[in-house]
Image 1 (cartoon, rainbow, N blue to C red):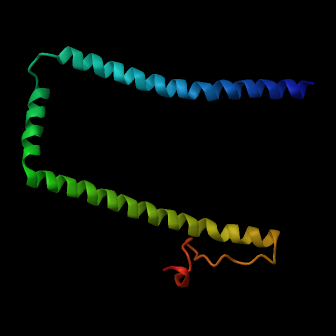
Image 2: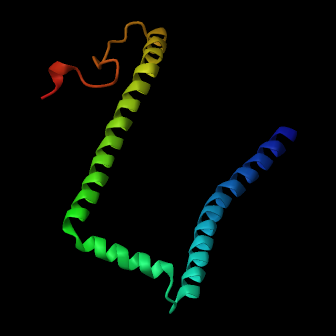
Image 3: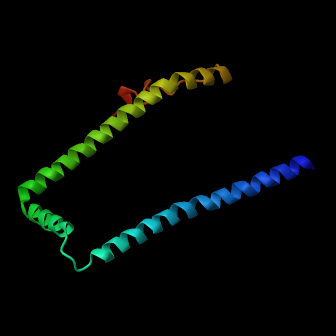
Length: 128
């Protein structure tokens, strides 16, 4: 009986925490929006350094060459990030792949290989 009570208590805490996580996350988001709104409200109608920044940004956007350079940098950064993530994923697959193969062989020694490369890619002869 004591074990069942313990499991019930753990189940209640688990449910409470699962409900609490989104409340904390969205509550923090709402708080940030509220604080930002109050900050913008206090600046309304005043000429500040923030308005100078808006005018400067608007002038720079008018320059097409500048905007193309900025967008090119963002695009190149995104492509570089994607390539780096792909190489890290392949490295992780290569590191963990040998372990999986050895465990599968222990379970079923007659198991055939899928023919994937060590880093998880398809066999070169299978690619179009």
